Length: 426
Ligand SMILES: Cc1cc2nc3c(=O)[nH]c(=O)nc-3n(C[C@H](O)[C@H](O)[C@H](O)COP(=O)(O)OP(=O)(O)OC[C@H]3O[C@@H](n4cnc5c(N)ncnc54)[C@H](O)[C@@H]3O)c2cc1C
Image (cartoon, rainbow, N blue to C red; front, side, top):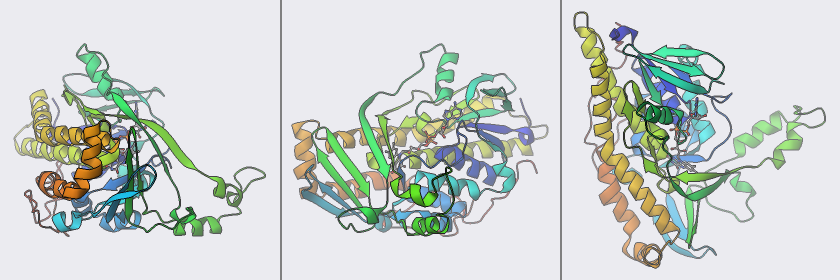
């Protein structure tokens, strides 16, 4: 049992979803700590991430729209080719038309950095780096998280936002006497990023190109401008990186690329006792649909909506305490709300990657001929994915100052007035 005002969340993992958790918990005035194993909160690594309309609604609530407008490039068109570059499908994204917001592409590093630097200093101080979590113990009163440097964090609940190889998930499994679960991976993904201007043939900004072929598909977003980067490098080109090399010497030769397995799957249960999973730790969606981060953002919105309303309700009771059954109810409500969409989206992404890689003759005919001939991509966005997105939650106590809507209305419009800075400790 703990008093609502003493409630503290330990977030394991300071990736995109962990830092989004930090933003939302700050907005909700719920105490938290984030423990991240890497040395930096925003390492310059990883692939680009597409931000969709449901995430834009949260960014509006967090007053982060201007900052994300600076780092994200809206994507307008998708062009689909064969392996040897023959174009066979080209269509507009209709996100603005259907949902009032675009789909826009940003670097993981820029997203992490923006989420971090826009936090108030006292919230930044709660994000602790170079701490790999090695164990979690739960009791009737709370949780203790131990890190590899011997430090410990104590709190009321743990949110596992530690990605597809989630230590939190494997420890949850161990607590229930199960094997550490592993999401299967049938595909691997090569990713990288670089300056559009360096490409030997000119490409328009704000395009999305894909090649589909037997066993192989590619995906590129051409929204990346290097002008600011170049200008900054020019300003600091004399800075040494070794005794004999400067940034100006090194930068033209920098390449960022990586190879990763593309796991797929949804965990059977997202919670156990005082531990709950979000983001890639809970559902791993192949990147073809560009929904992994957006799904993790929805996880956090729903989880904190339930958690905050429970804390507030308890804080109005005389001698109100947060009991284990209250936490179990919060986690159950969160799982119930998230089950349908994550299951559908993960399955849809599994189908899409197999269509793009023409894994059977039917999938090839479907992708190569039926999809462009019948405009199935546009139909899917409008009739299947669109209504699902339209049903998703936003923070239910914060005003959306710049709420926009497209042809598919938002069904969830909890508050037009900012109830926002209500402190559960007050
Ligand atoms: C090639 C590619 C393209 C993608 N494109 C898109 C896209 O367009 N749109 C989209 O929405 N999604 C996309 N995704 C998916 C997106 O990147 C992920 O869904 C998102 O990063 C998940 O965030 P997360 O914070 O849950 O997990 P992660 O990004 O995996 O972050 C987990 C964090 O936890 C930390 N951590 C792990 N273990 C521990 C531990 N024991 N102790 C402490 N810290 C720990 C890690 O260091 C990391 O910082 C793409 C993914 C790939 C691979």
